[in-house]
Length: 203
Ligand code: GRF
Image (cartoon, rainbow, N blue to C red):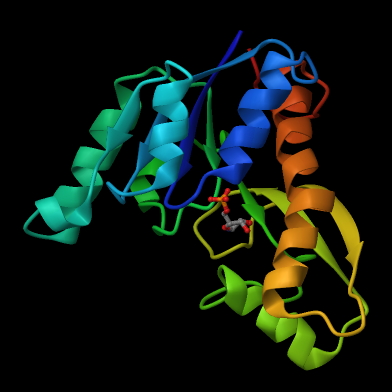
């Protein structure tokens, strides 16, 4: 059974998609053991609690500096003995020590087709604003392994989504979530949990 920790900052609809996919058997051999947020007000923590999953908060505001925050974050994550860390709308840059310790065991969902509209500054609605400003007709979502760069690790899965005439960033964001993100993230976990992914060490 793959022990999964999900790191979040916001509403947690991607977390919900993972929990639903495990509950309905779309994802097998995986269990969400903890949900952690940097933001105590993240609704994702409520979703975890409702599901009987430990909901942790490690906020940078509670620490004197970045190093102390990173150390606390890592200690909390380590305490669960996780096999896989899933970043599902986690708006904190992952500390390098965590990336080293969990090499090829951290995945992220990004709401565009990488390498378009990714990297520093491309998060949340900004990604969709940039896609609309550029006038692309197709966008989508990407699940990738996390390395030291920003959205630069190896790509696991991608799914394309059409941009419609008259789209606002909000409408496009919603379509990308419904048609791509909520499907891709559970699918990636299932692939890793069931050893269907070359190079992964799903247990
Ligand atoms: C998603 O669009 C994700 O791709 C991005 O942040 C958003 C998180 O939404 N990185 P939610 O918290 O899962 O609802």
